[in-house]
Image 1 (cartoon, one colour):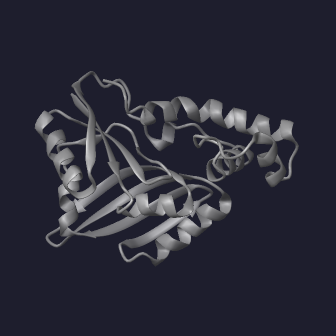
Image 2 (image 1 turned 90 degrees about the horizontal axis):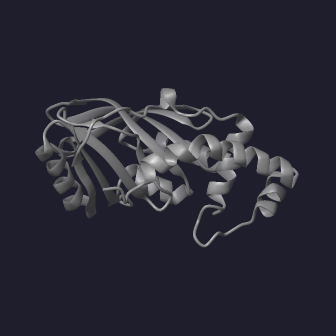
Length: 220
């Protein structure tokens, strides 16, 4: 199967704009879609990483968005029903699959990994993404697929681990240069340094191998 990795500036896309607005990192996976004559209906699962307050505000904004038909969430997991105009059909193809959830960084950047038996189908989606969002095709090669990353088999975090990783993301701990120290994060979360460090360490141990896979845009 051919595998392509596309990176694009998604500040003008729905989830990219909202990720940037609320300082969230998102993992998005399209579960199903239905292209109608004048619209496209899609059901999307999203994992949001950030502070509890920012995730709550993200949820409220989604509910006010015209394209969003329904949304429900628990902790940081969302199920979203979108109804887009027919122009969005160019971004959906039954000839391609998502190899990994789309990684949306908090600056709005999308990292999109797709597969197809037909190389041209990947190039077609890339050209549409480039036309609309200024995309880069950082990888396209034929390879054996040994895994499909889905939320059901993604690492499960405890509530405290979600809090720790959310605080670290929202306060810029992973930014370069780093905007906050662990001691300051622990004070914000009102726990001891050692307790916060342990929660964050365990969350990182579960998530970083997965993030490294979806976030690596330099592999050839």
